[in-house]
Length: 144
Image (cartoon, rainbow, N blue to C red; front, side, top):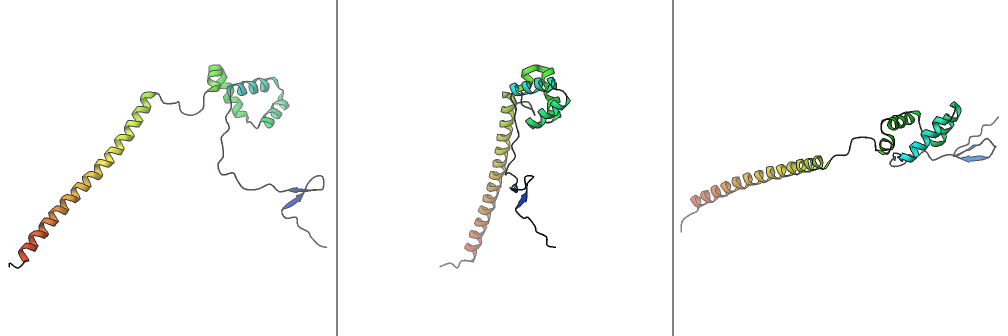
């Protein structure tokens, strides 16, 4: 009795050889986005379906019931305006953006000032050291 192994290919249901899918993960996953029109269409279609139809719709579109629930909440709270709004933090207004920019600039300037103070302190120490060395060398220099 001998055993044969199928390595990069496997038998399909039809008895033929099917290619094994590549196991590599894409470099960067991309988040799906949905337009307000798409959300409204899917909600209308979902609510018109029976239980089996709802499952088929979700599988066909690659959606989860949690998305349907959040879209329904968005629709109930603010119709198409809420459906079209991106999830996440609210966009900052102009004053908030300006405050963030000024904070960053302040941090940058504070860092530069600290560096400049260090350079000035080192220059002062170097100047004192050079002055001391020139004084010491003039004391030890034989007079001619």
